[in-house]
Length: 122
Length: 155
Ligand SMILES: [Mg+2]
Image (cartoon, rainbow over all chains, first blue to last red; front, side):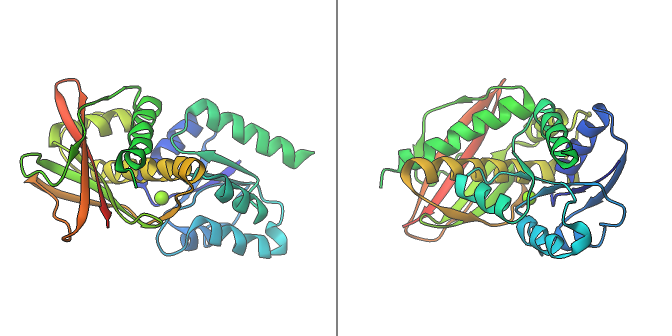
């Protein structure tokens, strides 16, 4: 499964990638902001994206992705520091399937991915 | 506005972040008020906040400790300041400020937006602020090293 990892922090992208490798995933594409993310959607089956990024933030990117008919059901997990309840409600309203609040543990990342992919199958 | 009530969520989130991502619990020391020229650092991750409260949230480390923190964060040996260390320090400031925002919205109804983090490098530097700002510094010890959480709020 091809996973798109979007975060402006290169260390955070590496930590996410290392964690995903440990739980059995191996096909990744990386992007440093929302617009780079939009350009890298080809063949992607799961997106894990940060919220707070320069140029185009994660929420704006999600709104753009959801406007495309072919990406209506593409699973998106938002990885964010923005732990306010209203922020989370807003993200879900705009098409985020699941969210993880930073700092996260590998267990939480795995659990949220499993949950998100399972929801898609249902 | 009680400054300590605002600073506490940042302190809490710092400890939580270090525990979760670095498996280490830093010990907070006595809070200091006002700019301190004796509290120097070599690398600072800083993030601007703007909204019901505005200013900056900074994490200030000595070189060696910043490398140690990045080594644990990335699970690889890092001995000199490089792009990874600079990125780590900025991202930690981002995670802590974002987490504190979540707590502040819910407990005190204080909301703000986060800017993009910046990292400053320079041996033995201090941070300067505009006149009329309030500065609060919380020292943390990690083994035999000290780093600072420094919050500057515009009046
Ligand atoms: Mg970010």
